[in-house]
Length: 107
Image (cartoon, rainbow, N blue to C red; front, side, top):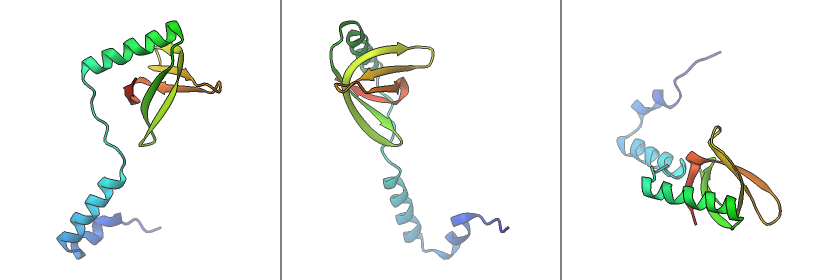
C-alpha cells in the first residue's frame, strides 16, 4: 500500500495563485465559523430556555448541526445540565436534543 502525503506533494508543482484559490475554496466550503457568543447573549438564551420549560412557551432556536445552521421552533421539555443538552419538542411532537455549545441564537 502506498502512503502518500495527499495534496502536500503537489504544492511544489502549483502556482502560488492556484494554492491561494484552493485555500479560499476550502474555507468557503468548510461551513459557517463558530463564533463565541457574548456572555450577555448566553444569559438571555438561558433565561428564554428556562422560561419555555417552565411555561411551555414556544421559542425559536438556531444551532449548528454538521456545519450547517438549523432553525427549530418548539417548547423545551427537558434540560440536562450534566450532558449539557436540552430537548425541544416541535408542534408535531418530534423531540430534538440540542447541545448547549452548538446554540447560535434563541428567540
